[in-house]
Length: 523
Image 1 (cartoon, helix red, strand yellow):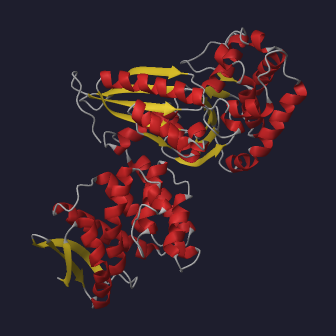
Image 2 (image 1 turned 60 degrees about the vertical axis):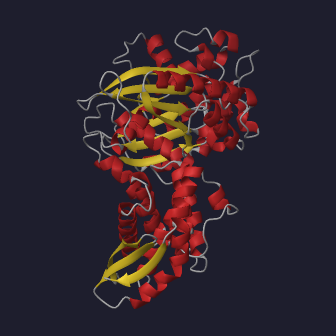
Image 3 (image 1 turned 180 degrees about the horizontal axis):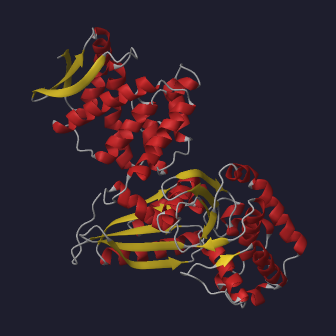
């Protein structure tokens, strides 16, 4: 992953957060000396989630606004030399039944491939963006992001996270649920209390989990917390240090009383409050007030960092432009291994299959059988590690169970299409081949379908060569035998005739995937 060079000698990339309330752009130039420069930060409050949480459909006007802003942001990024535009969508898109239509419009009208990420992945990216952008000084932080449709919670230090969660609690969502946007009158105390009770019940599990992960400092992000903390600091006459206002529980209670007692037109004129947020700010305040109360937060600081900054850090790590990649790179692998272990998988067998699968992938690439890169290799490896976890439910048809467990595991560090690709590869490690009529194959985009339709054969062959679960075959590789013939050679210390006989069953699948005949022999 390397963006083209700009005229200044560096490469440029853009990071786009298609949120429920706002769409945010971060444009960055990577300099030859391994530093980077922020070229621009833009935000537009399009309210993509407006009206959605009653019928879970993105409204036509909201989609029009979002597509227009995304198109303008993408054009600006490209005009500034951006070779990569990393775009993700969160709660509103994640839950929308017409998600496919919206993503299609972004692709066709804005030229953007937007990844829909899970709530936990959103929490991880927010944690990554904040924790790597502030000085925690050895402390553990609690990170809160109150968005339009969801609230992300994470706990971690400057090196790694300890807890991630996403709650279906957001300022727009609760405003719609409790009809808090009546412009004609103040919000009754009893109605606000009902919102708080709802939040408390919805967040009870997360609150219990956070209490088991002690933290030293609380940091909030996104517009809701920044507006509330800004109002509190202004009312207290407190100087804002480093652009990060803070708020205490008592100050929040006072701000809530002020907001609740003012009809919407008057609320918009309250100093420190963005008028565009006046109709949804009380719902966001209820979320913050409950969390501060239940978690005994004495003061929370509002950071300007957030999801798009996490996208930048993630990009640096994945593209190996970052000097300390260990912890972030391990997040994906750790997530994979924890899922396998939760399913009591045969880890030694899984690692053996993964090793053989990568042998086949690498040797196939050397022979020009495919042109897939490191990204596809990584997904194939993870599919190999998890291919048998369906046995946890039942051996019969366990490939289908593996697919289900992977697809619904909410793996950390992956977008939804990557998870679907891993799941589909595992699905086809035994029996059948990818077909357009299969739902698990049809849901993939064209790029992922190309990955699955070819690489599943490598995983299946590796599984055949490890059928005994005893590591009989130590190495496997493809060798060129003729213009249209590929040999599969293996190295084994013991008799592996049964493994080779099993591998012969996939000669037709190999020929269909790679347009070559496969012959199998022991080295």
